[in-house]
Image 1 (cartoon, rainbow, N blue to C red):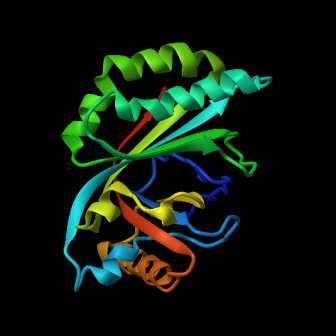
Image 2: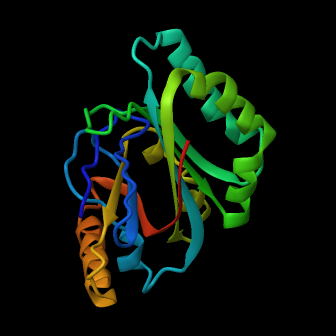
Length: 221
């Protein structure tokens, strides 16, 4: 099952879903042009045959803000989430913002982070500064949040790993969560993921970078 993805002006575009069904796979990419509609997969798969890659861990947090959230409170919430990268080690890339499209789960904001390894992600969840930000600036103004984490690969290049450069200064994030039926074979799953990869790699003028992987955790708070 493919769950709708959302458009989010500039910082983040995403749609979240957690299922008790078959295996879940996650796709994330940054597009150069807003409001582009397509399914994102890992453009690194197609190029990995010739380019060396490095494993990373991607973190997506989906928020459901309460009605009547003021601009000041919203700004503080997003600013504090963004500044967590300066208060702890392990975060190599970050993006945060409002979700632009309506969705059935009523997610309103999204946070995307990249870590070099799973251990860094584990430390992030227990970091006192992050927990303080959640308790003081996020959870009091949200109905709840959903975290989804997955392992992926990117080109072993410092700009690609840290998502640095002019092309990362604008555009949108696109996150797509897919749940495969329990009856789907390993070959079915691989063929589907490869097809997404081929689609993404065929759109270099639209996509700056994309990743994919099986989720390693999903948490509701």
